[in-house]
Image 1 (cartoon, rainbow, N blue to C red):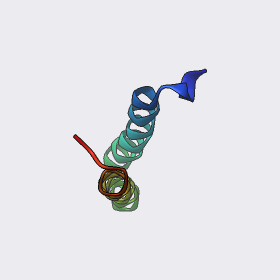
Image 2: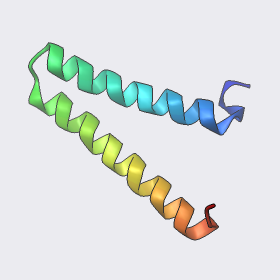
Image 3: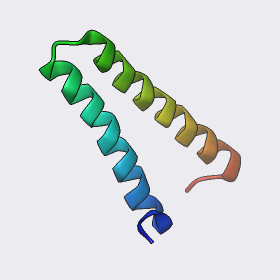
Image 4: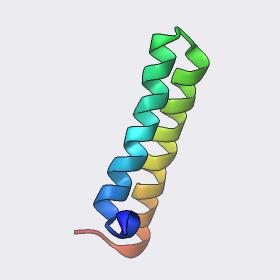
Length: 57
């Protein structure tokens, strides 16, 4: 299935977030840009916490 591979899922989520940011720039809507940046920050925090909990390389 499409979401069986974690790398593909992360790329998909980051792509959706970048779409939010791009739409914000296109429409000159700072709220959409901040929404996308907020999603990126939350994604980064989740990944860092998961690495901290489950151990990384």
